[in-house]
Image (cartoon, rainbow, N blue to C red; front, side, top):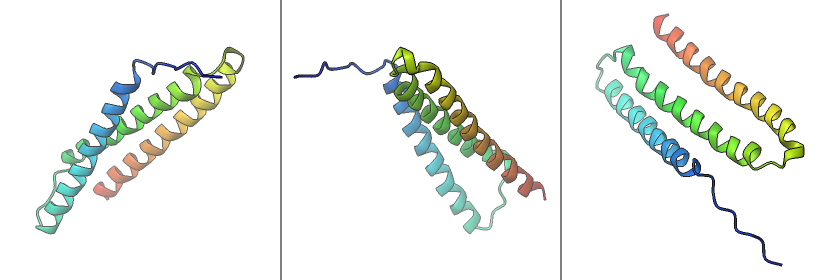
Length: 110
């Protein structure tokens, strides 16, 4: 028996592009910062907005892709449970990101 081919959700491709572009920006900024620290130059804390925003974009696109896989593809009878579990996981991931950003900012000002 042949399964019906499902077409991917229209937001899947833009979310994947956003995730990998943000990951490239994040890795490039980290490499650039490590090169600047080796030279002994001081780094303005405002430059840390680049990796912070890039990591937020990676998290948000990851969460969006997770939503498409878990909630949008769920059958109607399980959709509420999937939404609750997804919401808890999304809040946890954003909370971990926020905790890391706040601790980084506090360590700069200490």
